[in-house]
Image (tube, rainbow, N blue to C red; front, side, top):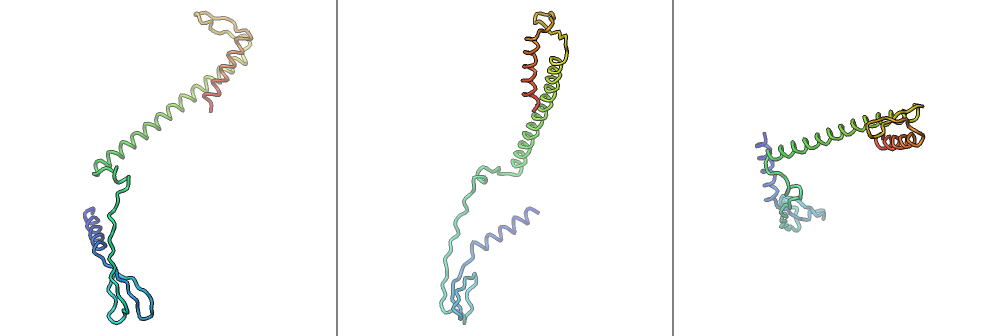
Length: 150
């Protein structure tokens, strides 16, 4: 099938390359432009136009384009794989942010609602949180909520 399409395109382009254009004025005074010579009795003046086709300039996409079908397929699979990896990364990041959001909201709720809050002292022991420690924990939890819960 691709050979047939290629053959038809090749034939079509070869006709265009060898085509000639004619400019002539008919009996009514109308200027005609055709690829056929004017009829014998209709032409007052005939001028054969020499039209040169400009060589096709390759576009930047064509210059950088892969040369074979295998290279095109490889490039396609490479882009598809990169896109899938990026989507997986975004989904993992979204899932992680949701989990952190839930933890931050829970932490905020604990600091706001538990009257006798006991927190770690950082040395392996626990202490009862005073108002300053409670407010510090609330502020930190609110920052985390803003950061992760978008």
